[in-house]
Length: 124
Figure 1 (cartoon, rainbow, N blue to C red):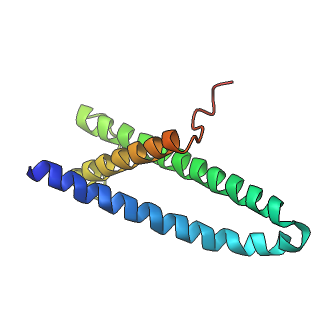
Figure 2 (figure 1 turned 180 degrees about the vertical axis):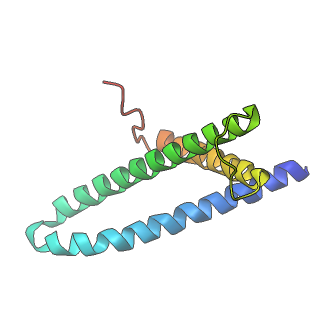
């Protein structure tokens, strides 16, 4: 029960982080959108917002995935004794970070499946 509770706490934190980043990105992109508002009619704005949302989602996913994979490689090399430097942070903290990042990737992948957002950019 404690592990499940911890998982739910981590899940809630990841969801809150997602909401925070969505709001932050929305603020950052709102300035960009205001420049082009005069040139777009209402239908085009709705379409652009949907594309922007999906594009931002994919960018966030790809950035997180790249960072997770890099951290994962560092942890594997550390455990194998082949890492060429000593991390500044304790290894257990880095392992916890990788675990949370992996859970967050899972959340984004699940949302993408539910919301029909294509994350398989390599497939034709």
